[in-house]
Length: 264
Image (cartoon, rainbow, N blue to C red; front, top):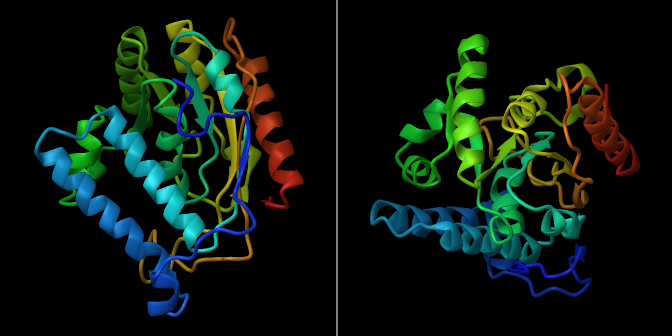
């Protein structure tokens, strides 16, 4: 499959239809989030009926992407051909800036490769989000015991990869708008090395979708901040993967500097 975005790159057209919510909700953050809530409700309905498959996941992600653009988000996506050209499953390692990337990545990757996430265990139990996440058969970690979490990711991650399912890892663990090189662990590299698959670094700047405040995860919308997402070259991992980990860090850091992200 070529995917929902058939080229190597994509940028939101300068003229894009505006959403009705932009006028009814006066261009506030809830103009953006109202569309997200509707998509999640439809996705949950499909999930509880056992109908939320890979295609439905990709389509709901694409719907979210389109609605973000209808609410003035400007997306710039690069490197999709690198995902297409890589045979077999891979480990994607990405920096974690906001909720937005967890919603956008499935629409980019899932049509090209079967994929799942490493997620926090508590996300599987939520009323709205839980059925959707459980349908995706993710790798769930507690984030309370790093050693136990490592064992789970390596064991279950190898099972997913052996069955042809790629894995998305956010080594920072938590969302942050500020890039800190030392806060990016080598979990994804370890998993790729154990499973004998390449790693693809993913650099992203998604601070259009704010975090924090009273509504955690649904902070202010920064309409002046374009959304950037780029896939790097696949990197085969040998030995302990120290050099490969540095290559991932260099790729992500270089892109974030180019895009004007906050650096520590």
